[in-house]
Length: 178
Image (cartoon, rainbow, N blue to C red; front, side, top):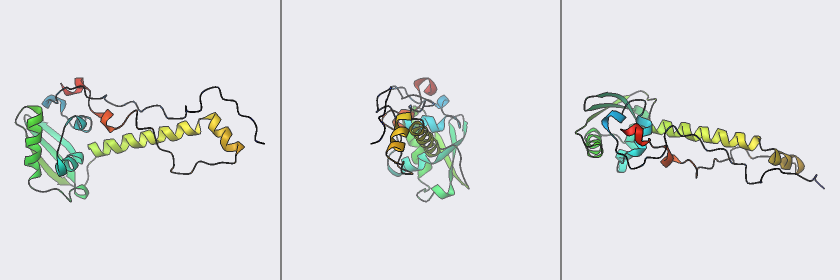
């Protein structure tokens, strides 16, 4: 018989603590031109709405520069397979409508980008996974069960609990949008 296990806390307490988002959920605030900057673009992105292919294009854009009402974006050539000449105008219209000012957006193809909403999402997901794996490895009761039953954690089987901090929870805070 395996040894009896004593547990001082409930068995269900093995999930990783939620990732502290760089910005909480958007509370009905409007994105403003001053909220747009190269550093804040990946966070502000989730407060904006883009339709169809434009959403995928915008997800992979890096905001390079904000100058008056002009926004200069870059897209990595590897992410530009669906990009066409109409997208800068569509992006301009979508941003203008949501910001409430006439915005002129340009998009240039570059070898690679670094500060995109897609990259931010990937970094958050990687952080959540690392925290989930750490929580599992630090759970004494689970480790006792693994030893008692000669078990193992299947590599790649750990998934973070995204119900607490999904990508909808990564949008910019209202104070970041003002």
